[in-house]
Image (cartoon, rainbow, N blue to C red; front, top):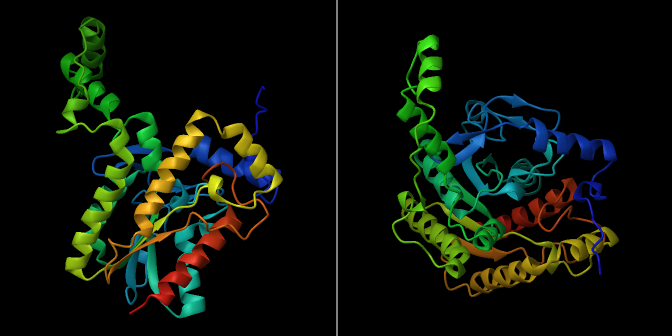
Length: 337
């Protein structure tokens, strides 16, 4: 039976077709992404789009120097869901909503700093955490992730490697144009030397011990959590590690969610479900919980909602961000020492 295409941007999570188009245009067409030497990539600094605002550090966050210095800092790390992929503005992304809910409903005043970015797996999340740790000195860390680790395993990748960038550098270096300042000489070198064979690096440049494909998601997820837990235990930083939700595990799917699930649930669907379930089993064991590090599954986060929450298997809109932010904030309040 031929599958009927379901466009995720036609999801009824969006207030209107016009808003869905604006978000799509900003995320897919206008937002510029740059390589980053420490975190892999980040948005180009100082972008002001109709639904997305990026600060001078490449974060979807207010400028760091404008944050209230009387408040303690809290990090949120993760991939596109934590970043706010389908949100209609920076006011509707998880970090902003969690900060507001903690303040207004629980009188917990924190600067919640959004270190998440699109496509980040646990590898990039950990690097982003490490880069900001000593400069921003958080008292709390919120992790909202898991799915991208599973997708990395599905693709057989432990991390997204910057081979194109490095191979481009090697080619420019071979031609002698990398630091050439004279325009005429630059063009001449390109014309005279462009026939030279390119030097290509492979994945061994990035890894000491290549993992078997079926180890990738578990290793990524657990290694990140182990390192963050060890560091934060030493520094007395509280960490809430939330396994993010996924459409398959929502019990009451809307008409759109059912149609999308039928369209998207191919051979990889069962793989994703199995791996997410294994991550939840690990989370629910609680054997890795400590006084300062808490593991919580949000796979069932939207089970009480019959309305559409998802635009695809992972991404949620403004209302979904409101719901997940309230659940995270409530858990934090209930577990304050």
